[in-house]
Image (tube, rainbow, N blue to C red; front, top):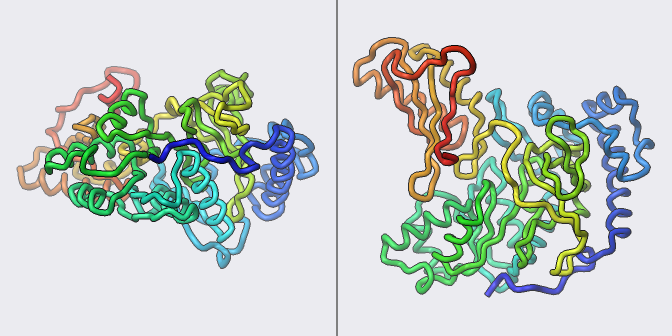
Length: 436
């Protein structure tokens, strides 16, 4: 069964002195590249009175201003690249509040680094070259599918590029191919099991899946228990985002006590979400990450908006000495995560209010239906419409939202005056029933 402990590479059990020496070397190189190759960072660092020579210790990273997601949007699409476009071999992007996605570029060196940390992550979960990895994640703008794919191949395992949708076919192929490892959004693991039972397929007896590696959305220990039980598997939480290559920044080991950060590739800090000042170990705050090996697009102190904490202990019982973060608790902003896809309410608003046949009253409702998330968007028409007009308007808005957000919300057109009004204060635009 995958998930068993394994022999560690030397870097995974290096001393703190060795790790921090390598981090400082790579941090200085990263700051120098950003300062010399990226006009945005040259201006930002110069305004802060910082040059590459200012970085003499790891603590000096705190002198550097944070990089926010809005900085990526303002430099859309290529202005944060440190290499000519001719050296970029892959692009990924995520949706944003302005209608413009945040674009991330990769050179061949980046692809190799990403494959390496994903292979290392798979190995931490006990996956070997004997496994068949079924990748039920999107193969498109988002990084999940290709990240898992590259990592499985780098490890030498058999990668199945399944993608998303067509759940009955997934069940059939998981069974017929003898897949042993599932990479997916955690809720989809339950959906697959649900459909399997409907098809007369016993997830435990009729399949060989025994390891699950899940990410892209927050998931509770209770959800983990349900997944493990229905599949008789061991599941692992993996962390990452497109700005940090994608999945593979950190992962649990078989002790399931925090996620090991691959510190030779990332320098992490936990800061107070209000002040930006560092907090103590075990104290919750916003995760700030400086990638140390990004080639195409160096980032300095990237504010992830994810809430977690840094473990006080420097060594895990698994033997790894790279520090651990707690499982992500939530986000410091109002972003919704719908089946692993980031959705900003303001992006929904932009699309809705671009339609002249609706007024400015709308509401987003997120519910859990079965084992999947569903987003409903209720929109008031600007005038009373016929049934046919309502259906056409709903279809039009649903198409635009699907194209922009890469999820498939359900749009409901309601009569003028039907949605509740805010009598002073902020309108309640979002109702997340998953949290009720």
